[in-house]
Length: 525
Ligand SMILES: Cc1cc2nc3c(=O)[nH]c(=O)nc-3n(C[C@H](O)[C@H](O)[C@H](O)COP(=O)(O)OP(=O)(O)OC[C@H]3O[C@@H](n4cnc5c(N)ncnc54)[C@H](O)[C@@H]3O)c2cc1C
Image 1: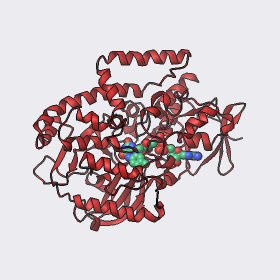
Image 2: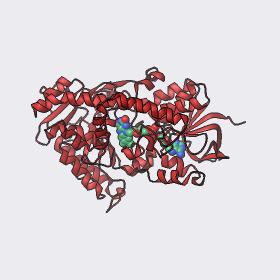
Image 3: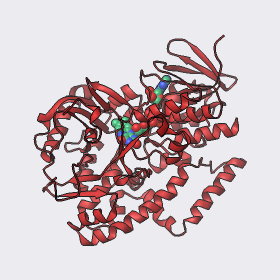
Image 4: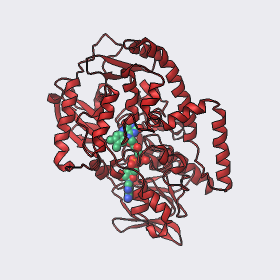
């Protein structure tokens, strides 16, 4: 007789795995089903070029919450992060700023441009850290439905109101942060464009907005949710990003969880309005007391469910979720690390800048968005080149390196062409901009993997290639994510739960969807 599981999880992204790992630790019989041949979803290490272990999608770590790492004992199963020394931003005139975890070192760098901004820097960072602490606390809370009179929602509203009250007058500045453009927000603190550009860059990452768009100040804050150490809290995973799902899977399996790859779910099975299991593409049916989906909301509800069983307003909200992406990634095997024109060894306290922002001015960042608004990829894109092999040489053959380039904006749909026509040409364009900052870089490239939004959708099942399963703006956050009334990891179908980045608090490798969904499920079991 076929095994009946307590829970079947759709998708072995890090959130699905985390949810499964918590349930397995709570003694439940859990099966995770993944459509790809590899676990991890957008968090994977893959041998894209022979002998090179590449973090194909996500590539740097900071956001995973310490509680999850400790609860699941991830270091025991291979989790190891290598903190970064600094974030280096070269400017077009050959100058640069290096930002360190140590504020006094960063202040010295900023003082090259403005003494006033150097003095303001610790004030700004202290405010951001306060805001991050508040939001980190919110990450762990299941958002309430503010229109509900259920006891659990009323309790949750009280909990949230209490956390907000404790902020005192800081609340007003945090409200600015939630609503303002990153550009206007930075204007309140700094005078020089260089420091503003370094910070505003975070407001554009993974989002189809420019630094002058309202809501981008929050995108900056979202990137500061981690507190794992290193410059800005960021680091590389030893062994590439695949070490994240591998360690979670190790922890889950140690408690009896089963994981199957090449197992694409075609349908969520229901009986009398309750989820009873799933049917795979192969036709196999698997039954369980509950189904938990870690796939994006549009796949989960519009493809895997019969939409006739869902409330019309819910279907409408999921359909309207904004997932149009402009983020691209180019992974390269190279025969030497990039040599930046603006990097002068000995002048700053940096051995080699292996985490870099190319996005030298506010105007540069905004213009990159302007073109994308009209359906064209940015002629001068902003991007982050990283060289993980400088700190983890085992990832590439001796003497060779990997360069990850992640940036924007490359619209999912082009107005005048298709990505099949433009993919190679656009990668050349990105590299020609790279050459301006690191002369001769293009000549060092041995091989490359070009991932435009439709490629990210095809390979990783990200909706329209969206790296966070949907934009991180207030209309799609907290009690609005993924749809009003379904912010608490439940869905309109009984025994069907959701745990991926389309749920509160959104995307990035932070594990909160998986963690919070597991808590709600265990509470109600
Ligand atoms: C190019 C790129 C760069 C990024 N860089 C970073 C970074 O450096 N740092 C960072 O913190 N974040 C980064 N992100 C964002 C981060 O990787 C994602 O937000 C996060 O990994 C999403 O995790 P998840 O578990 O919620 O979903 P996913 O990783 O999307 O997992 C969902 C899983 O469900 C599977 N699935 C879907 N449908 C089915 C089905 N029908 N049957 C079975 N399985 C199914 C998918 O194959 C996938 O494995 C990046 C993302 C991308 C794409």
